[in-house]
Amino acid sequence: MTDRTRAVDAWESLYRAQVSILRRLLSVFPDDLSFNEYDVLFNLYRQSDHAARIRDLTKHLLLTQPSVSRLIDRIEARGLVTRSRDPHDARGTVITLSEHGLELFRRVGALHSTAIAREMSVLTAAEVEELLRLTRKLRGADPTARVE
Image (cartoon, rainbow, N blue to C red):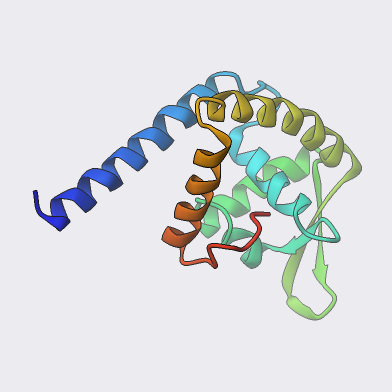
């Protein structure tokens, strides 16, 4: 077997594992928040002030900029985020997690993290550490850096 074939096999295995786990996680995801909406709230929560410019937020999501804008319109209408002008650049828009959004994120996040822990429980602690090291390396990140 060639190195190229082995690399393709490894990639396919990684991709299939991710798809299988994501499908199981989505099957138990609460009805009051979509996975993409949760992803926006999650990425806002990770910011020190729970706020981000739309263009910066888009970098962390697996959606196009127009899709992100429509998604933000929907969650803003539900009171999960607020929108304001960037004080440093009038052309930019800042999205901030609202109190209601923070409450919902924390509730769904607790359920989601429990489901993730259940999925990952098939791995030993050493295997989890190795998986972290390998995925960081694949992303081009410092393999010793802390995952946020």
